[in-house]
Length: 495
Image 1 (tube, rainbow, N blue to C red):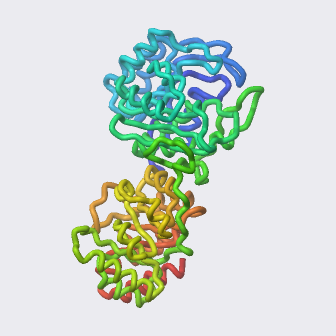
Image 2 (cartoon, helix red, strand yellow):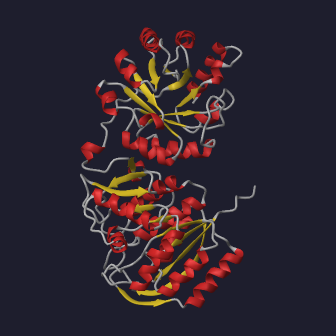
Image 3 (cartoon, rainbow, N blue to C red):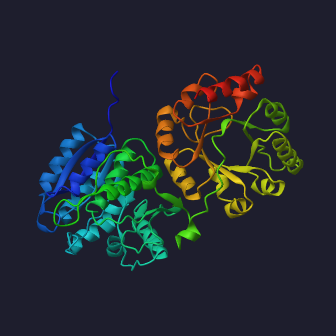
């Protein structure tokens, strides 16, 4: 079987002779994300881990030739821009981008670590007036954002203002990295905005000074993830995790700070960021308390829409069940939930109420299940204070990072296959993605897989180690629901 053709990503950036940043770091990163990397070199640098001794900007004709050669044969799905060492080179890139329709991320390399400017005032003005309107994402650190906006950035709120100012200058979106801001209770924070929506990515403040090339690697990882088919917001989460892993595993090689480690796809959950929609103040304010666990795997997890189905299924030994009544206007809803809670207690079944968290608290349900949109309005503190378990739906890395910030009792992953029970804005994840997410999440979370799972597919789903299948029509549309439950329970026992 022929392997799939990898996506192509370019880096248009400077060469780091020390191997820690620039195109060297970018190509390492592209390789780890499974994309083919091409490079157009904007500058040759003589540098090591201690200093930048010399910079030679590439002649404009040479950069034009490099870009032209790549465009004619190896067109890019995504491009990362790094050091553009002269006004001429900024102009060259701007001219090319006028007709380029792929994704562009720019890491605005403006200063050496020594503080020396790497671009003249004319080049800086060109970036602000001509380059920013042609890129999809800008990834400055605090000092670069200060140069571009003229603002002083010392707090989380100042980061938000600066990021919005950069969008006003023309960038479609901004990820402002907060590595230069003091950590809050052991957490570092980056802020993303597209002008309409924004969120924070938080990660461990890793005690390792070997961070050379972190900005280059972050932007390259975003470009690679987008080229590989991920959405921008998923790419941000993956790139942040990749950089966290790289810093954690980095080693000193010379006399100065060492480069980030490039160790492939991220698997430890400790490296993944948590995602929040409010500016950080303190970890204790931002992080939810860990919700109570579910007392083991959920096993077969039917999702039903009526008391009648609960009355049919609970006597069959179902260990967990979700009641999903989506019509909030139903006058009988409080009584239905009260009846459901009583039924679940009679059979010692873990009952999760979908969406209606206030009624779940009032009636004493075992837990609540919330979709991503439900999280916007739910009072998570009230749910936790009432002692209820919490399940959260996820369909992407962005949503996993958001769930990880909430620390629920279980995480639902889906849709694994196409489903007809509800309109989905996400494509089917498939078993490969499920396996990857199980590897990432199972060490810390109870999991369940949902979406298009039937008796034929359940063994393959459970072979990933997920531990639970949430099912709807596999039971409710079966010729004999009793036989369907028996067969699905047998699959779980075999797994």
